[in-house]
Length: 279
Image (cartoon, rainbow, N blue to C red; front, side):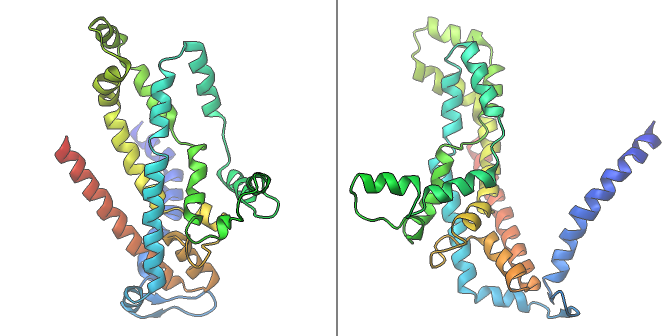
């Protein structure tokens, strides 16, 4: 049985090694090379990393990634938590229908394209409503001050993994809530004394995942603004993509990717230390 298990695992291990471990190892190798598709790679040592330290655009991209992650956490992270708490107060029938709606897949790229046209200043729905209200002309995604906020804004509607929180809350014994109600506890008292402490481990995990995911944002700025206007929405992953596939500078792109990887590891470590000390 053990040998059969290893034999059956070989295809998955080979696929993961080919498409997971091998590209990761090659990234660390190429980061020390001047690598292009048409020519032979040439070792340059730490030249790509020294260039990174003097690249002002890379610093702007890292700052924009941090800004996007902070905006997303402040504006959208708490929405599925609140919705899950409120759904636990409705009837079982209504809750099941809402969970079914949550299961309906919404393609991220398609919805991002729709939002891009929604913001279009010429024939977009939002611009049309804006003009009908006779409000001053607004640049929307062409505004350096508002472009990043408008990219994050769809997250208020396309909010995240509420099913995770609902599944956790459904496992809470109802006796706790009934005992709290007999003691005269209000709705907010039950939330802060029972619900949130129950959700705290899940919230911690989802917070870590949200930080890692949002710092690596690519789809929204790539589709909606291509990093503009004037680098206002240029994120780190989008800058890596441009260096690799627009400028064919794969060595420098890998150096940027490794730098982002180190920053993410540091953020996760600091966050875990803070959560462990608070716990």
